[in-house]
Length: 95
Image 1 (cartoon, helix red, strand yellow):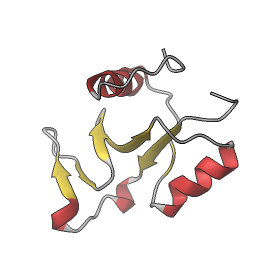
Image 2 (cartoon, one colour; image 1 turned 180 degrees about the vertical axis):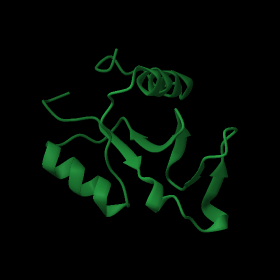
Image 3 (cartoon, one colour; image 1 turned 90 degrees about the vertical axis):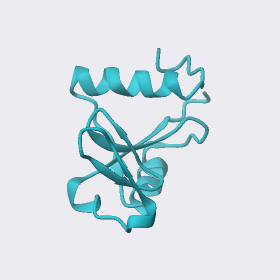
Image 4 (cartoon, one colour; image 1 turned 90 degrees about the horizontal axis):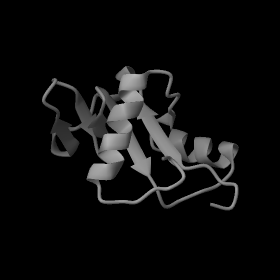
């Protein structure tokens, strides 16, 4: 992975307000604007392709209205792993 970070975006509650044409409604009522998807009750954008320094990836996150996610909840971490596996993407660096 060349020492880069995998980009994980978390969109805060204030930023969840989205235009209806870009909203997906999750089963638990969380709505996320594109490109974010509901993962573990939060709106996240998972990019398993782009890598870079922490500062570069954080700047990219902020440019689309998010921030780097802090995974301090085992249930959210587990939901994220299930989401990644469900996407059909093999990601050895997370597992």
